[in-house]
Length: 111
Image (cartoon, rainbow, N blue to C red; front, side, top):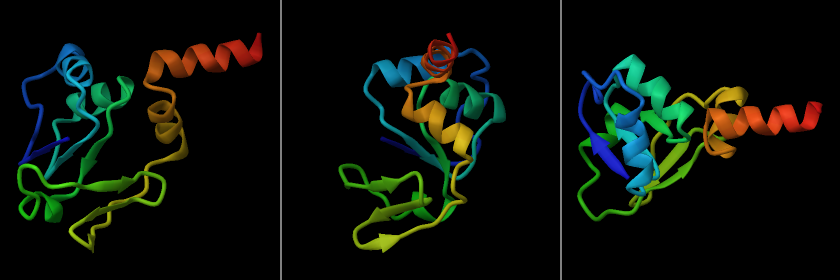
């Protein structure tokens, strides 16, 4: 997991910025805010990008964070933070591992 400050991903207009994080094993990014194009590229690559400003400063390197994407609740050291639950379509894309696997799954069902 990466925990970051404001406007994470600014200047990363290419999809590879998110793709490389996924390939490196990053399971999610929590930030105070995201550059919009990075946010969408992250979702398209199956990488949860969560805007939770109040959680950023308390989380320290090596800390464990549990994230319930469906409920919109991350937990850190017994404290629950909230973020708006992700729309069903975004959850489906993340659960399927990204937009391409999600579309392949949908097309296979239709075919």
